[in-house]
Image 1 (cartoon, one colour):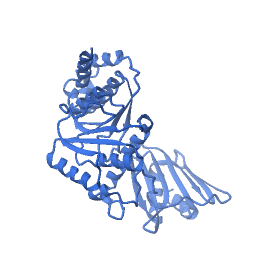
Image 2 (tube, rainbow, N blue to C red):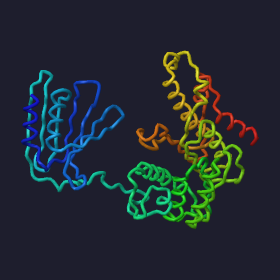
Image 3 (cartoon, rainbow, N blue to C red):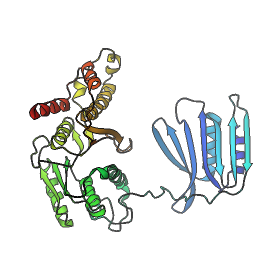
Image 4 (tube, one colour):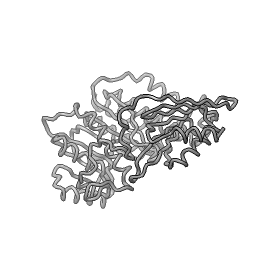
Amino acid sequence: MKKEIKDFIDKNMGKGLIQMVISKSRIKDGPSKVKIRPILLKDKFIYQATETVGPKVLHTNYERQELIEYIGELMEERFMQLQWEGQYEDGLVLVSKKGHLTTKVKRHACKKEQAALEHNRRKKYLLAEGTAVPFLVDLGVMTPQGKIVSTKYDKFRQINRFLEFIEDILPRLDRGRELTILDFGCGKSYLTFAMYYYLRQLRHFDVRIIGLDLKEDVIQHCNELAQSYGYEKLKFYTGDIASYEGVRQVDMVVTLHACDTATDYALAKAVYWGAKVILSVPCCQHELNGQIRNEMLSPVLSYGILKERMAALITDGLRAQLLEGVGYETQILEFVDMEHTPKNLLIRGVYTGKKKNLEKTRRCIEELHLNPTLARLLEEQEVDDQ
């Protein structure tokens, strides 16, 4: 059967191929689907196979004969259906449970010219490739010619993805006055510089951005860079999230990868300052991992790695709910792809003033025997305001 399939593919798969989909796996483990498309890679015509394995997507490139061998093995050992779409014809291969092979080819009028084959088709990023951005050059993400450094492409994508989250909430920000943005735990400040550049120089918002971190040498370096670019309203300070008192009112608070309860203190500060927007990527959610107890879930919680992951997800879910209880509309969004970092959830809160009833949230906290830091901090604020 493998030879029949290979011969059929070899005979009918011309360069007019647009895409191919292999599906209906007979085996539970391994890929559930494979998509194949032609691409141009360094001026060479090849085929890219994309295997879907659970939540992962794996890419492999093949030359023509390698691809035919690969397809033959897949159809003989694993899959029951292959469909392809071409400029001049469409094809179908079916393999029955008993191994019977059915093949069909349907010819048609030429479709519109095939989409561009360039590898990694150019996405329209908010910070465009090909245009040198000074801070990205100094931070090693771009070359002076505006080309993305290959080892930093994930960082470039991450920066643009973060700016997309900000672009979504721009209608909520007041253009008629200076806006204050705080970035807690700014570190090397890739995203802090990106915010300033995007909001002030590309979108022409009047913003003042403050970066805060505990590492004095990093803060000094960031201030030197900001000064060299003429970013007059971008300042960096050494300080702790919980004790920072440098401002009275803030329009947006950003906290990325603040460890454990440092995220809670940053969120509480944002609420205290009346921030219109909160963007938070939590990290190292240890607090509830040491607290969570539930008799019904005890068989699952007995596995340390599952308990840790469940506690992290519950931590962030409760944070989002607690923010809704004080008037924020919240979303939990994917920040970057899982293969780049497991810390890939972003909590975005936009203040609306509509406070959600948290009866179910409180019941959840009680059932799991939890005492979240953010809940305590927000309760203390409420008492102080009375």
